[in-house]
Amino acid sequence: MLTRRGLLRRPVIPELKQDHCTICLDTFNSETIHGLLPCNHSNFCLQCILGWAEVANKCPICVARFFSVTPCLPNGQLVPNTTPFDVEHRDQEEDFDYSDSEDEEVCKVCENYVSSEHLLICQDCGDSYHLNCLSMLEVPNVETWYCDECLQRLPKKLQKEQWKEMIAVGRPKKQKLEKRRSERIRMLREKTASRSVDD
Image (cartoon, rainbow, N blue to C red; front, side, top):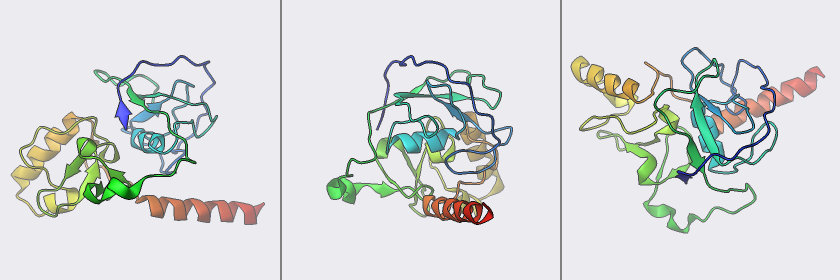
C-alpha cells in the first residue's frame, strides 16, 4: 500500500541512461512520467515502479531499498505540484494473503489485486484499473468514469470531457495502455532467450 512518509536520503548513484523502462521494456517517449528513486535511478515508468514497490521496495537496478518514489520528467526535473509517493517495506519472498481478496478487484492492466482507494471502475463494463497503470496521479474530476474501450462508444463530447480531466491529472493524451503483466513477462523471457542464443 502507498502511504505518505518522509524521503530517506541515500548516496547519489550516477544515472544509467537508456531509452526504455527497465521493468516493462517499453520505449520512453517525451510524455513518459518517470519514477525517481532516492538512489537516483529513474529508468522506470512511474506506474511500473509503483507496481514494483507493491511486491518489493528494492531498486531493480542497484537493489537499494527505497521508501519513496518521486514523479519526474524525462529530462530529470520533478513534475510540478506533485509530492513523492511513499511505499511500505516489502519483500518479494513474503507470501501474499489471498484470504481477503474476494472483495478486491483485479486491475485489467497489471492483473494485480487492488484496493478501492487506488482503483477506478468503468461505469459501463465494470472493469477495474489502478490509477498508476493509467499514469494518473489522482482520480479525474468526472461524475462517471469509463475505460478507453467503453469511452470510444460514447458521444464525442463526453469523450473530450473525460480526456480533458484525465490529462489534467497526468495521463498522456491517447496513451496506449501498458501490456498486461503476463504479456510483459512472456516478452521479457523471449528477449532474454534470444540474447542467450546470440551470445
